[in-house]
Length: 495
Length: 135
Image 1 (cartoon, one colour):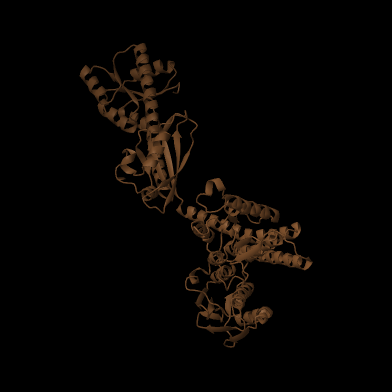
Image 2 (cartoon, rainbow over the protein chains, first blue to last red; image 1 turned 180 degrees about the vertical axis):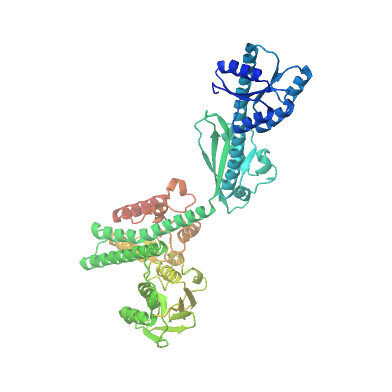
């Protein structure tokens, strides 16, 4: 506290005022004087005092009223009552009203000094107490707003959160946790864990974490099953410790990993499928090379040349497969820079037929085309369209019969241009039809066994059409032929 | 030239049928081929081969299993040795072994594709010899 205290003396007797001033100045305090209650109050309003000496009997304001008025300005000011001829009862009354002590007149200087000293000590204590009180109020306020802030934050989280204390009570949770774990009885706080949580495994792990002596345990992760057999939840549980490392409780974060698991499964299926598809041609190539190199197959030069050609054919199909895989990867990763513009599909189809004519000629297949002139343009990427129609028309050639026909027609409505590619080939059985757009799916029977393909052509065609917001559909009759219909959105902007 | 033992190859991959046929034929075996389990069964019934070399994963993925099951549970055919060739092992990371899997996988031996010609011949000779000494 300040070494120099501010003291006010309020007394109508100049002798007392002056006496007090002299005594207290000697003690090192700053002294102000007031000759009556009115002036005294004025001083108190002007500046703050640590201690005030008040004469109980003054002409204008009574001492008791003055105490009240001073304390209404600053309740921590120490008031010492100076009393002359008043009875002891008045002094007691003054103390009841908040005065610190009284000093009967006449008083020796050392009594005054001692009393003021004690009063000032009390003043110091009061100020410290008030400061602490204010700080505590402030902390509580901050804490309350911090708590509500934390509640709001965890309430917004998609992951489920559970906070558990050492008494195995659930003290904090969020809506996601309620939903994921189907928590019960959450209208009550501070109940034991099994009051809320049905999942035994989760409770057991939390128990293990909370009873662990090992300060190194920083996190336990565990998959948990719920009533829903499809859902997989991942729980991460971490101990909460104070600065000394004493365990206070545990935080559990729960994430719904159902989708992730599905994707992982699909991915690993795809990888093993790709591995198998890549391995078969590679094994065949190596096998042929072994036969030729080892000489175990016998045969003459012409025969060996034939076998090497077979290996080369498989190498070529392997390369086509890898190219198709890369193509799919590009489309799926969205890495294909599509340049959407007005495309005349009739022109693309005519060009594709021209390009594939030599293949068709080998099987003596004839093309028939029919479309309005002009075909309304579609909104598409030209290269994608070339890829799409090359896939579909080369399929129509590959799966056609000798002397067959491929009919390509186009129609248009207000929104779509539809291209139908019909062949007179071996067709697709109703059982196989739903699977033909699946990765690596190939219809396998006596008739298709000699037709080479990666099993990815229609997968790519479908992805291309999807990326153009169109539809790809198929109708087929075994032994009669298949018709693939591509619908693509028209280019409606004026060009 | 040795006596012409009859070996049936069952595989849906034409390349493997032909390369195994070339190797075996050049060593004097009489080689029959079938491109499916169904066709294989027909050939077994019609020709009674001395041995079968079977691809495990054919058009239907269990075709090899069910084919060998049928042969090995048929009193007429169960003495015919079966050599399974697969490309499963490396694709799936699963490796079969005779002592562990032989009791449920009805086969007499396994080999991974591609089978080097000398290994093929060695295994075929061994299985045929085993069969002769056991009958």
